[in-house]
Image (cartoon, rainbow, N blue to C red; front, side, top):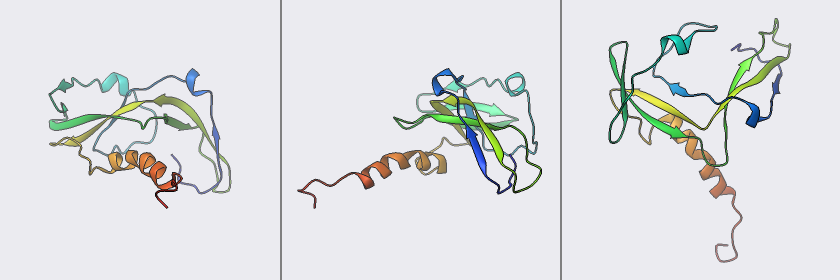
Length: 139
């Protein structure tokens, strides 16, 4: 995605009519900006253990855990239509698909409660508790 600072227009289709994706968050960086045939080249042979999933990726052992989106929320996969020519130009971002869960992978050990993504996904519950009205007994 472009890193321009211009305005962003988010174009949402009804989430129910949008396809669902199977997502994997891998502990790597891909130095490519463009489309790729991921489904053609990344079809993992995942082994399900008692506590975690495991797989090999390019000779490295990965441990994974399926993480659900917090209740009442939907994960969105967004795609930028085209890159703007200037920073002032409006960016158009469309809803590509939705997801209810994703598999988070780490090198050698399964994701834990200290992983950044898992901490971020716990925030809606924390925010709800912080902003809940107090009863008369609690005041």
